[in-house]
Length: 453
Image (cartoon, rainbow, N blue to C red; front, side, top):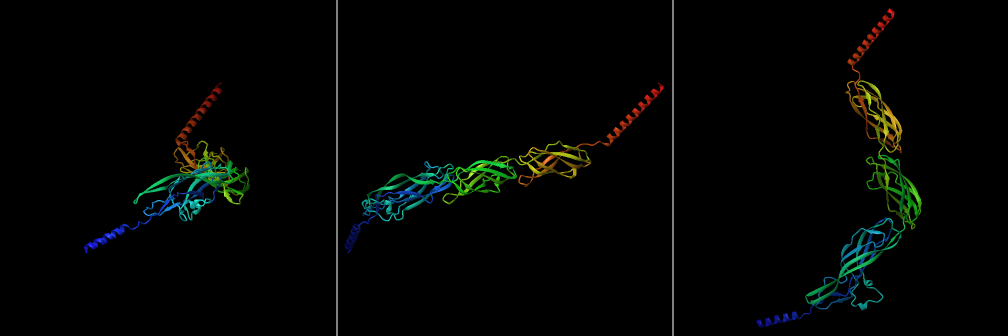
């Protein structure tokens, strides 16, 4: 009985060892086929900041499929582009590419089916025509079209680098060896530089533009581009944190033809904390092009000189006054700013030991460098110590656009000097009396001498 059981077991083992091995699939003879194109519009204009989006497509087809018994299925497919790296360069195009090459990983190919023999591919079609939904990947590149770009068609070289499984060797039933091939290819992408209006600022002249005031900017602009702008509007914009802020920032100019010149004036304000220096503003033109599209030109930055804030100083010598005295003092003011102060009024602040009911004086229009004298009536306290005092002054005026402005505070000096004392007055009177007696005695002596003679 035991012998029979042992024999049956041996038979089962033999049968099991003789069962056929299941076949595995190997794809042979294929390779990736990478194509690329720009997604969306490929037209740009001079000075534009652009994003160039590229779609890469893998149209690779497996030429041979092996499903033989005893084969091992490879980990990779020959049509998969592995470790795909994509880089875009400008070539001879007037474009600056800002994005470095990008590694997009593996890009597989999805095919309609497997072609079992290259002989089955018609000679008049390409392998890519057998693809149902080929593998796709999208890559974006940041770019800048140079401001001096000329219109035309340009080729941007797109470099692609990857490796693929080029051959498989199976030396044994449980061993497989892979061979990979590295590929470097360049795919040209076509871009077009469109004709556009290009700004050339010929002149930027400020008018009554000083720190803390409003004034005007007069611009002269030429269309240096290749497009005739229709229904054009020229706009000025604040540049970052510039001290100049436009208050009327656009002017409609209508037609702006190629090589045409226009003049525009804008009202702007300068911040109070600005300095006497040049500050930037941005200029752009919005217009209708030949295709009826509304286009905004590249921005042109131009420097605008700003004059120093209108300021005043006292140029007269310190006024003098005695304790207890009421006196009219004169203060001379000078406009040391870079613009005219209109309808200027000065104000003197009387502080201890002075009092006054007359602290305002009208100065009128004061041009840069002009001096005007004002009069004030002040009274010094009888107990005022003899010394020099500084009194605050300010000038309120109108700028060129009739805006009310107030100058920074500045000082005028008043000196308290000692008056004649009581003891000194008695001494002066005594000396005068003695002089009178002496003169009287001398006159009497001379009279007697004449009588004797």
